[in-house]
Image (cartoon, rainbow, N blue to C red; front, side, top):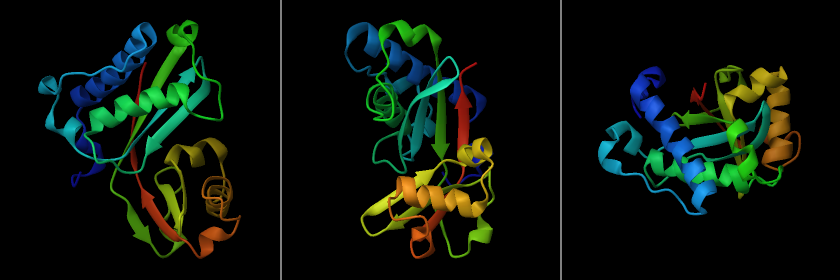
Amino acid sequence: MHQNQGSFLNKEERQQLLKVSRECLEHYFNTGKHFDCSEKNLSGNLKVQTGAFVSIYVNSDLRGCIGRMSSDMPLYKLVQQMTISAANNDSRFKSLNQNELKNTRIELSVLTPMKRIDDISEIELGKHGIYIKEGYYSGTFLPQVAEKTNWTIEEFLGYCSRDKARIGWEGWKTAELYIYETIILKEN
């Protein structure tokens, strides 16, 4: 992923990745088994090892969001795994059920490589996600969190530090800070 973020996934690859996620979700609810798509029809960019998050909405309500900042598996496999996890394992929400499937919408957030920063003025709200790390503790907010909440940079960092990394409201001040961008893919 050393290209600029807009050119990393072309339109066809974006559609392919959303299709992989949708087929995985439907296969799981129809059979109870994990979907294993064939790698041979997928482009090279879908086989790159990078982080991704899968958000599942029922009607317009978020019902699960699970992902990884980085991965040791190809992007398409990570998306498959995170799709099932978002549907079943986000402790903030009850698991999806078969009846809700027809009202679900999938949103994928593919991450660009992280960049360590020393000054919070490098954070552009709405453009950058943040990753905060202090010892064994870490937490992240995707860029769209800032857009939806209208938080200031300090609030963005404070909520992530307190609620995600669990190092207190001002824990970010002594933690390692990273920024990244996401490529957002949404079903229509």
